[in-house]
Image (cartoon, rainbow, N blue to C red):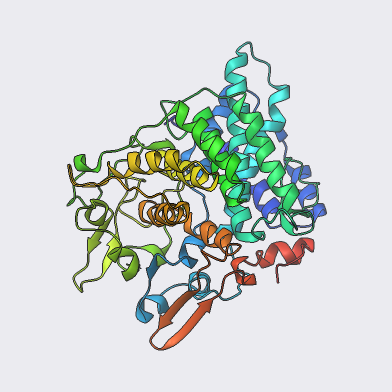
Length: 459
């Protein structure tokens, strides 16, 4: 990754001060007062392609701010009462599905990254360069980053997408300019998803097919994110179309027979399945010392399924913890980027839902033969589309744990009678439940943003 110079760091720190005003929605007169006091406005504005690339190459600013609240609320793990009691208020409330509005970084961090992208997008027309291709890549990358983070926010703070009500359902605040005088307002769900998709469709025309540096966006990454977005909308034809497009550019799978079953960190960062690398922070609730794998999930892996020993480790008390992180790190930071295994599963699901069972069988079997001990996998076969879909959905959960994807799946399943799930937690006899379609599937917006700007709060 590109080294950050002191001058660039100073720019970033100055930008961060501006972003803090934006994210917390401080009244406009305060922002203007701040800007009036700045002797050199250019400090916070990239004036060269090098400046813009320097911002995009800062991994901690751009790639490592994905919210983790949805994973803390999902059902792939459980906490003991003593471990839960040690957590801060926010994750304790996320875990038990209590409404809570002191969100902090899960709300502000993605918007901070979006503002970096907006500053680049707004500055580019004024940057003079003869290298048009390089300028296009910078613009496409910024558009992707903006869409990626708007999407992450939509899965927490907007209702699950429903085409019948999307025109009236409240979406998120869309930040499409770096102008701090533009007052934040909530869009509709239609506007939210249209904006995300529009940014991505613009980005794909500007980016290279693939990149050597996997923390940078590419056409394959754009198509992969489009597949994820359309899946969250239950638009399965488009989800399958874009998953297939992404895989046409990059389709490598890791043969788990070549991965150590005993390694503390089985996968390296930027491994062969990664198309675009991104991650969350390191939420304490998801640390391997606290988060115990759901017993039914762990029990669903067969003896010859290598995922059982590669993705998980056995604790001293017989419970299990997650270790199969594609971040390449031994901490609670979760991989949230785009990887080929997710795309194979999207394609398989979209195919069976679209009446293409033979294609779905081929896709899911191509994935799973790489997950079982050599010579033990028996290709799945069925003539029943319903059974095939159920099988694919089960494998989706087994292949993608701790990816911040499960929450979105639970949200979309709430619209389907066959796949609805009632979530349940037990903390030493105290039971908490989350029925499908419950309003608590939508997080409350951060209190500071609501109080400062009058945003409509989620119920």
